[in-house]
Image (cartoon, rainbow, N blue to C red; front, top):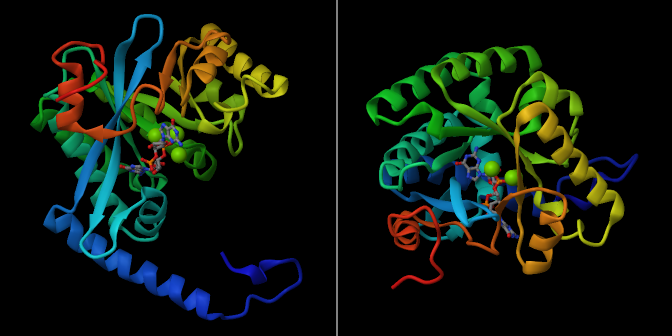
Length: 282
Ligand code: C2E
Ligand code: MG
Ligand code: MG
Ligand code: MG
């Protein structure tokens, strides 16, 4: 971002800012076109139980292939979409596509979808959309998992609880994403009854070497056993990280170690109708 945001300094216009602003404006415009023209697709990253190698769920991750700028990271385009109503249209597209794709997965695998705080700001629309999609795509609601970040809980705790309760009535499950960054209030774990808590990727590389971080992860796992939710460790890339996580008692893992996010065709191929991943695929 801008260099001139230090304490006591005015934010002064710079050519950098103009370029940033122009790119944002262009991307927002192009996203609308992209949604209409099939430029978006979903990739899927498996969540694996390290005790038996079974894939318990897959997370849908949005991909955008821009016609002239190439692949753009969701870390860039999601925040832009969130500045307008676009995220709601995009979010609906993701939910529907994920529900359709789920039919192509072996039985017993859940599908996880990231939901933006902005979608929760329109609770009637969100609930109606999910109800309609579940019915139209014949998705077992208990196989749909919505990933929320703490920002939703911070922004409007009461409304979020109400919306979650309504959605839970439909049968869908909830995961708290990126736990350990931001507020990470333990109170949330008691109040919102998440089915799953995903420990942020920033812990993956330090659990083995940093005793304090390891204690935090162990505490979450302990709470999980007492309260009754599942824990997923995100972003595990190598054997040492897997071993360090396994030592905390966590059994569910998502990360490049098992697979990066991949297209549905590749996922189908690697699963080959079973619940386990094979190494390679033709
Ligand atoms: P997230 O929901 O926390 O998703 C996990 C991110 O970590 C993904 O990045 C995934 O590719 C990455 N990741 C997984 N394993 C590893 C690993 O071992 N190493 C490293 N370095 N990274 C790993 P991605 O796909 O770029 O998505 C970034 C974020 O964009 C997501 O974070 C999510 O917050 C947002 N996002 C993606 N798709 C959607 C969507 O459909 N809707 C909404 N609202 N947000 C989305
Ligand atoms: Mg997520
Ligand atoms: Mg995450
Ligand atoms: Mg994230």
